Amino acid sequence: MSSQFKTVAIAGGTGTLGYHIAEAFLNDGSYNLKILRRKPETENEKAKLLASKGAEIVYADYDQKDDLVKVLKGTDVFVSAVNGTSLYDTQVPLLAAAKEASVKRFIPSEFGGEFNKIGVNPLIDGKIKFREEVVKSGLEYTFIFTGLFQEFLGWFGFDVKNKKATFYADGNKKLHTTSLSDVGKYTVETLKMPEARNAVIKVAGATLSLNEYLQKFEEVSGEHYSTSFFSNAILFKNVGLIIIHS
Ligand SMILES: NC(=O)c1ccc[n+]([C@@H]2O[C@H](COP(=O)([O-])OP(=O)(O)OC[C@H]3O[C@@H](n4cnc5c(N)ncnc54)[C@H](OP(=O)(O)O)[C@@H]3O)[C@@H](O)[C@H]2O)c1
Image (cartoon, rainbow, N blue to C red):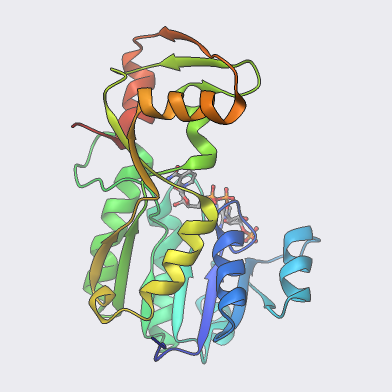
């Protein structure tokens, strides 16, 4: 299926996730891709690599709306893969500029678990509040929930180097996970799916219990992992947010 969109801008396209989204758009081959970076211009190996594969690297001062609007003119889809202490404050100027530049669709920097309750974690609060702004903006949107990035299973106590697993929750608890490259591919696919317009898209490369992830780590490495259980309410509140209660 083809997409009605031609030009995509990715803010944060040099980041841990953004780079994989950028690669997926370049591999798809149907889009003109702009990587939006913050001024001042700085050397960046990932930006160089993406430019060598055909992306245009553009810079703007995120505090200057006119500057942002100028680089976003002609963009059909804005993908935000930025990070920062407040994903609300960081993304509000990007949304305002996208609207003024007549961007058609906005995909905010979600890419985690589906959280709807304010007050659990400041990062999540920023994401929830910003989703409301995106809906209010009148731009088309897609919210993409992916669960934990598989490359981040260390956050859940899987210590590959030392072959140790520390469970912060019951080992039977299920967890959605998706690899970074698959998050990139799913993001590209949403542009071809009519049902992704003004919608929440939930994807998962795997939904397994912590015990089952442990089994996979042991199978792949051919080594036994030592396990321990560590009940830490604060840690669980931060990292355990993504755990799905089965
Ligand atoms: N589900 C999971 O397991 C998981 C794990 C990690 C992250 N995430 C989510 O994925 C998204 C991207 O995270 P990431 O770790 O890939 O990000 P990151 O690599 O830390 O940063 C991405 C890019 O954002 C830009 N940036 C950084 N700080 C900024 C600021 N204060 N204001 C504006 N732009 C800023 C930088 O680009 P330039 O310097 O080029 O402008 C940076 O390369 C976030 O929504 C994050 O919560 C999910």
